[in-house]
Length: 139
Image 1 (cartoon, rainbow, N blue to C red):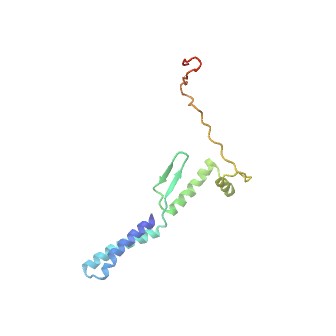
Image 2: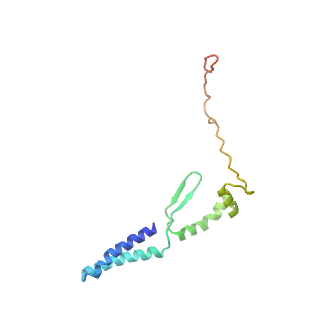
Image 3: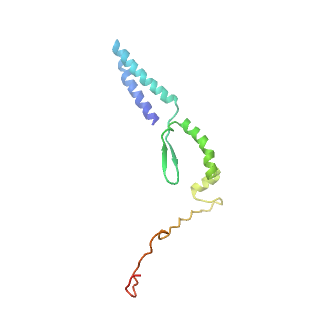
């Protein structure tokens, strides 16, 4: 998104700066001032470092961290929270991580995860009333 803003500010600076070459007097000063403002915005946006979008993914949801918009800020945040995450979840070596991405275990054999066990009825569900076909009665 930072490149988009830089392009917009640069375009607006050119829109006001280029015509200022052909005119003179007070109009040129106003045009150069507006072009200078957009030039300052371009320079500051470039100087602040590249932009990024940062998300936190949990088992339940993915949440965007709107305050983290620069790569430098995201790296600083990761340095602070990585030890906390590894303390709770544990850590993987690069080999274990690569094996899990491919779906294999540490021996190299494919090891799919077991599917979740789903009970047919919730524990607190009322009993199901069925019809006994031999007698024709419910029960």
